[in-house]
Amino acid sequence: MKTLAIDSSLAAGSVAALADGQVAEQPLPVTGEHARLLAAALDAQARRLGWTTATAELIAVVRGPGSFTGLRVGVATAKAIAWATGGTLIGVSGFEVVARQSAGPDASLHDAVHVAYDAGRGDLFVATVTAAPDAPGGWRAGDPRLLAAAAWFAELPRGARVSGPALTTLADQLAARVDLSVVPREAWLPTASAAGALAIELAAAGRRDDPHGLVPDYLRPSYAHENEGRSSR
Image (cartoon, rainbow, N blue to C red; front, side, top):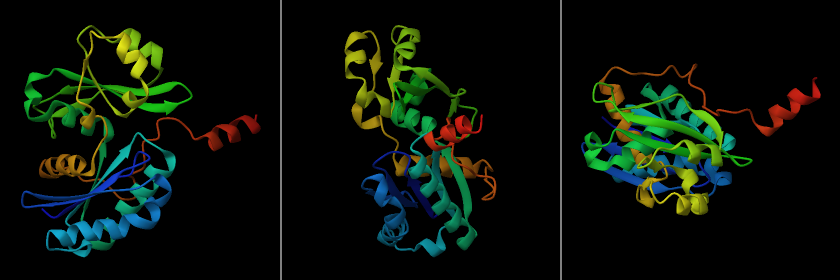
């Protein structure tokens, strides 16, 4: 299945094309450039595999969590391509993408991966993602929660397997919890290729998102929306 995949959830993301066991992937620069570069970057990766955006059959996008601007641009681009091509659209959870990357080929050996994203203001978006052989994609994320970083570390059990983008800013806390199992750093950030691989499995199981209904998972309102709420009181 000719698949295009987008991860624009963080400051630096990636795009990928996948087909017939081949993968072509390209990193993206900082968020401010995503809107300008996404479409061309996707087509360039598809052409590396011998096809074009116009012939894509599946379009995958990380729907969150992440930055407001990045998620908005990524989801909007994925929708536009799905509408133009008639391809299947699937939004995937960044938590599940990171868990799959963190477990690697031995997913069955790990009961859970505790994944954390930076939510700003000293908070984290966290979810426990468990191996679920019966679920499409092989992993099932629990309900995401917004927690202070200190509270998350306090509740992690000894030996917990931890991963996620937030770990890049939590060096001191990780050093204080030497009893945790920290996955290799290269697995902390979601990638478009991993998102595409997950979407292919979900599509095979019959999953399909309605372009009208797919929205980013921001998990908390933006600063602007919070300020609007305060000013209306």
